[in-house]
Image (tube, rainbow, N blue to C red):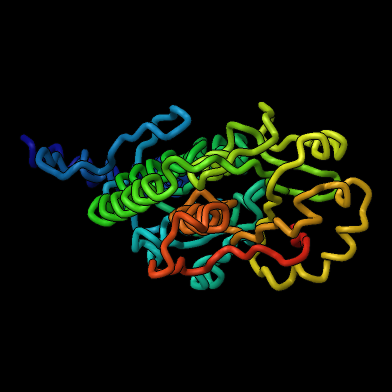
Length: 349
């Protein structure tokens, strides 16, 4: 009986190709637009396999979204420089299929296919790279980008660190999502141990009153809830700007009234800041700052701007600049020590 039914089905296929054509076309289109992991689920479901390994794992990202991530993440697209750094720090750089125009560390990141800027990446280029996972951050990536990719079946994990500890937690979270826990755990432990050692070094010191300069004209600094403000606290300093906004615009009159002990500028090339010294000293407002006249200007690596492992390097550099008396001369120097300019300077922000 079953054999006869099969023969009738085969005869229908042979004699009614026109009737089948619309259904075959629809099924082909469905497979084309469907994410690869969903196609695999259909195939395995059709085969009746009951003991197959999980096809995906569910995670809650740092802004509360549930994300289904394939069990094997082999192609990653990063939408922010700090996330690219974390991917490489976890030893997953070979799986990075693409990143943004601003991803410049490590050097290998610059050789990856680019998908545009973090704020407005080219979603067609992202999809063309066929990622198993896209990494984004709330700080600079738009929610429209995240939702747009999610709607077409591309999983996006979003981070949102607001402190140095939050940055380390993000490393652990991304390690879990990428199934790189064995690398993430010792990396996070090392970073926390370095911070603990730093806490012991500067315990009992008086926090330095500082101004972190994000932009010079207009004058923009950092708010108290940013990861940079937390990095300053971990380095034994506190910002004289106590604003709720993340990147507040400050008047020179207010800064002159507050008179910070140190001015801090972040830049990739400290030497490039020196040519701005004279012009900065002659500008209205700036010339009234005691820190500028005394040369209490710290030029720090731009790693301070990125919540990634190198941020701990920057915290250590700042602590040495602010509290040099707490560090014995025989200690191993930091990899890229912060510079305190003999004269005031600014950097190309």
